[in-house]
Amino acid sequence: MATGGGAAKEELRYAEYLPPSTQRPDADINHAAGRRLIVVGLGVAAVAFAGRYTLQIWKPLQQVITETARKISSPSLSSYYKGGFEPKMSRREASLILDVSQSAGKAKIQAAYNRMMRLNHPDRGGSGYLAQKIIEAKNLLLSFTKLK
Image (cartoon, rainbow, N blue to C red; front, side, top):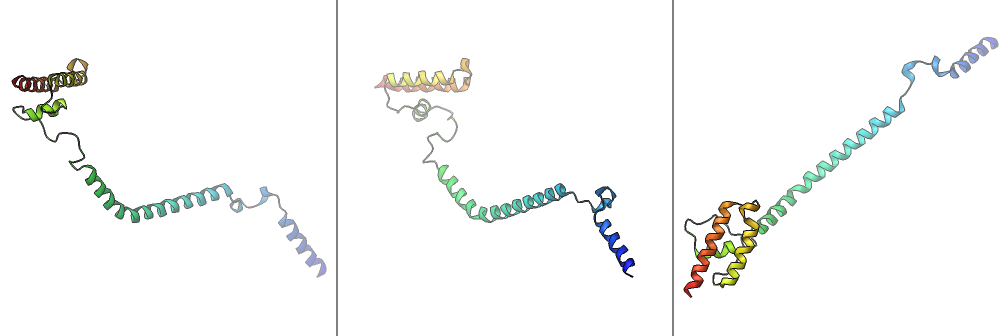
């Protein structure tokens, strides 16, 4: 019995120290693939938690953003004239086009006309229609200054 038990112990000892080539192939564990799976899982979890947090915080922020946008787009803050050109140009519209007061003098009107034409001249890529309106505004305002 002693010899039989010793032989079994000898077999176990050699079985424990078999070289890797003689072990079963499904027993090999690819540690790099396992690490990648864990990292991908943690990344998906982080994105899910961030998305949940964003959705929870978005509802109150949406009201604040909407109110702020309304305040910014109020007409009192805008320096631009709302609307298109009138069919017959008025003195008010002419002064808005040239960005001068309705009672401006000839020198101011001429300086504003030169500045606007430099910016909007058709030869420099500006609109011919806008240039025509600028000329019309200058002529209208100058006609009112001649009457004074």
